[in-house]
Image 1 (cartoon, rainbow, N blue to C red):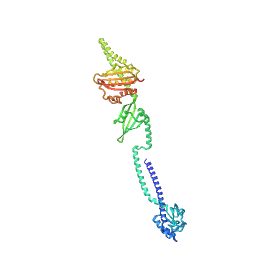
Image 2: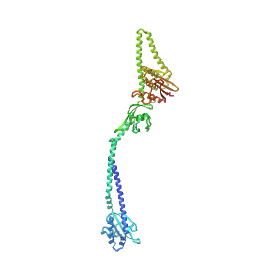
Image 3: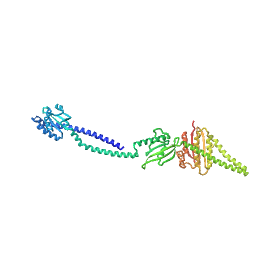
Image 4: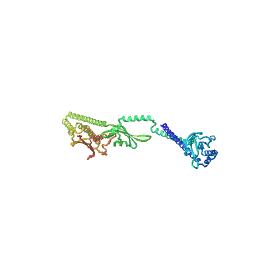
Length: 503
């Protein structure tokens, strides 16, 4: 790059210098023409010349006069001649009396001749003007000339005036080019054009091939790069650079983010954000996005199944304990008490089952509530299904109902676990008037930030949780429903979700 810049600058300076030299040569030639015309006109109008032409021996006066003027004006020749070309003066004395070589026709007619002509002294710029008598007739001619070599020598004498600034300009241009090349090399980390081209090709190929979304913003918060996967994950059209508020909060955050869940539309994304630094200065922020929507949903369902399995295992353990108790009482001969104990336990279990099955005809949802009841009992919490509950299996998709009810109940159980008695969670499920209403209340300590409950990643527990309510919000937005969070009358929280039933 440095050599290329020096060559370009040198070429420009050379072209400029050549142009200046040509202009100077033209100016010098024109100056020579003006000079010889002025001198010739002055001689032609001199009384001494007019009187000498009329004398019997014009050369005796005109030769010394012409030579004195020639030396004084630094011209190369001054020739005074008769109209028939006979020379009366010449710098070479031997040529006096011989005919003048050159064009004089225009001067004989009273005009002026200006030409570049090769004479006895070589090529010269010359002029020929007439000498008029008082009556206007042409009685003589005056020719004044400057040799072309003399004009070129004048230009050479002026060359240092042009060459010195030219050399200084070249040195200055070379120095600036060198500084510019060093700066460019630092900014490109020493990479040449070929390396930069390959790096761009690899960079472009990687950006468009990776499945992870990639967003880069500068220090001013402007998006400078966004690959195709990021546009797909954020549902952006080609050319659109605006990002959702949840992503903007991450990009403008001072602290880095690591595997942080983000709810964008109907997608659950996992974001990693890092600040880009170069030379100790912050130059921007890079954010990567991965789609974990299906994984989060499957994880939620797996957690529900795992919870149900654990609840069933707890029930089996408790049932085994009660069965051993009944058998022992029978062996001790206390049969009546054994029957009363077994009957009471059976009535409690059957009552809960009848209550749930009577209110919820959707089998997966009923099984979920029964499992959550056992899980709640294991934690010392009473799960109550409101008597006003009624929902059938055709209202909404079973998977969405499980997501909403399961996550709301899980959050309520988390809220009341470890709190003073009584610990209760109440669930109301109603399907009527074209909508499904899910209402879950608890007797826990309540929420400190009710408005933020359904926001991305909100949690009162350890880092990495807080996805359940985000999944609930995702279902709400998918159906175009609504939700509300309010404090319970006796303490705790009431969360209500309304989902319109698709027609």
